[in-house]
Amino acid sequence: MTSMTSPRLLRAADNLVAESFAVAPGESVLITGDYSTEMRLLDTVAGSVARAGGMPLVALAPTLPYQGGLSDPYVGDSLKAAAVESDVWLDFCFPYHAGSGVHAAAMERRRTRYCLLALSSAETFERLYGCVDFAAMLEFNIALAEYFDQAKGEALRFTCPRGTEVSLKLDKMKLARKGICKDPGMYTVPGTQSFYPVMESVTGRIVIQALFDEYYRALREPITIEAEGGIRGFTGGATEDRISFERALRRSGGGRGYGNFIHFTFGFHPAAMLTQRQFIEDIRVPGSNAIGMGLPWWEPGGGENHPDGIVLDQSVWIGDSQIVDGGSFVGPEHLRTLYDAMSRRLD
Image (cartoon, rainbow, N blue to C red; front, side, top):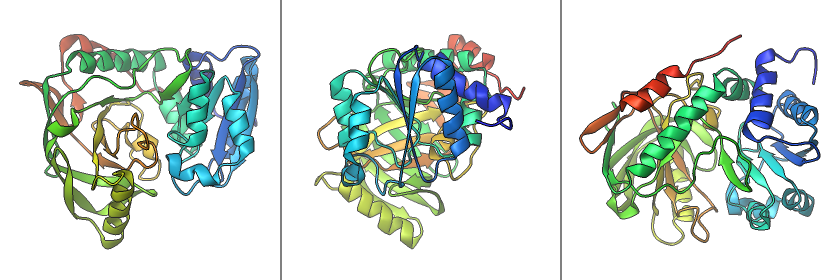
């Protein structure tokens, strides 16, 4: 860490290490990055771990060619050994290790608290963890997760200005949002909330403007995905995007055609910017929706490859009640109060 580290970046690291993961003296903390990850980001997080009394280990490796289980041949035994013996694993690699063999081994060991950070930019990390009233954002995030969970069984519809029109039945939550990540298991960056469909209930069309399949990019031409229970087909997109997307869908479908829709999301982070480079930040831009496709990650083989497409500026209804209007959260009142309490911080 150098004297040029900004106060916001230091605050971001402390919010991750101390406020979110409550790293305690003596805990072993594995910090994984790849050759795209900025060293000042890794150094600052490692410094925060050391100040908390933890024992950081920064592990760098070449950028993985795939996420999840497809990355297994590219992960060495030394990283596997470190992961299963760590109390906390902060994974900045993108593609990420979640869904891989080493991740599964760490989860089965029931020691490790794993965070899927999957970002390479210190500026993105600074915005997501340091340029926001972190406690207020987390309070809204937890309350929103509970709201979606209580709505299971209800009809949900979402649209976007590009022509998205989807209806589905809400299923129960698969991954709970917690204030302090104190128990072994998998965690994600706050600022977005997933909601899960009863998979056979998804019908309509989804128009995505960015895509993470084998890599992440903004699309030259939008892709329209047709939904009828599962993924029935798609049109549009530039030639290279169609080829890559179809290849990823067939892999992730596990021999079941193009597979299903695993999750949808609502991004609401007040400091997030649309970078077109940092996937984890872009899906937290207010009004964004990350469309997870393939096999569910909770089924065998479901973590091997998980394409995500991004819808922007969405509107959402649960039953007859609109909760998101063009990206802005509009109700109900008890959640609006928490939403309005979030603020961007630049001090």
